[in-house]
Length: 319
Figure 1 (tube, rainbow, N blue to C red):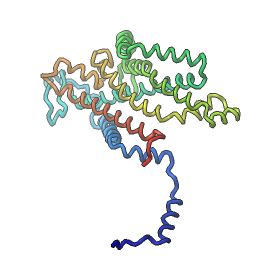
Figure 2: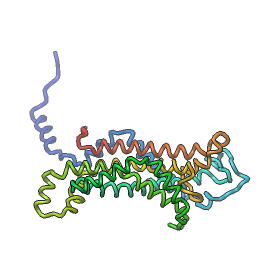
Figure 3: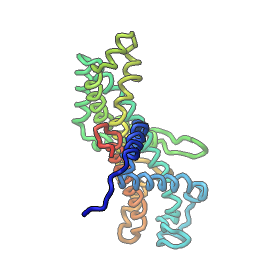
Figure 4: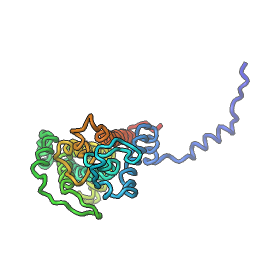
């Protein structure tokens, strides 16, 4: 015979009243709750914070002059307490080189994605909102760009324009002109997928009631595009931009490894791999550490992108 007693009526009423008084979660709170459930995304975000702290905080400890200092008596030394990442072919400390190379690799990824995102949003928004001839023209251009292999285009443009842009000074540092070139090349050859995503979002949203109401009140097309439709399309744009950073870092590493990317004296993780090409067995530390940093960065960004996709999806379960 069960000895359990039923809850008192007053207790049930209190619980029901508490549930009614609990305020509903906002969209940001729902997104944060979904994001927290994605353990790999949390891991990726933590690793990215550590990588940015290493690349930009490390510059406060090791000056750039030390990273570029050569001492042939220390060439190709294995990792030690004095040089945790070992030294390269001219005796430079690989730990310091990886710090300043990481700054350039991460900045290339971020700035290239800014170029990619701006172009993708503009072209996709105009094509999706106005439709007709403009849509057909912009989509034919997009499809033509998609038919050209991106890596092939990167190699050709880097080879053609390489060495024609002079070095420049920024924040007291000397940067190779190839940094700006690589940013523009990656940004100008990576916007097509985002443009198609934005176009699809605009096509599905432009006939919604809130857009029709905005038109009825005399709101201009530009305000409708950028203040009404675009904010409601931000989720796929954020996810695409996040993953685009990883693709840009990989693209820079690829062409730098071929000797066509960022040129010395500016270091990147990619051209550090290029300098280790002839020492794969004799000095494995030269490629292991920059390769590991690239791997961790790309994996972390992909994990973060997956988490943002789930968090920002309005159809995702909010449990």
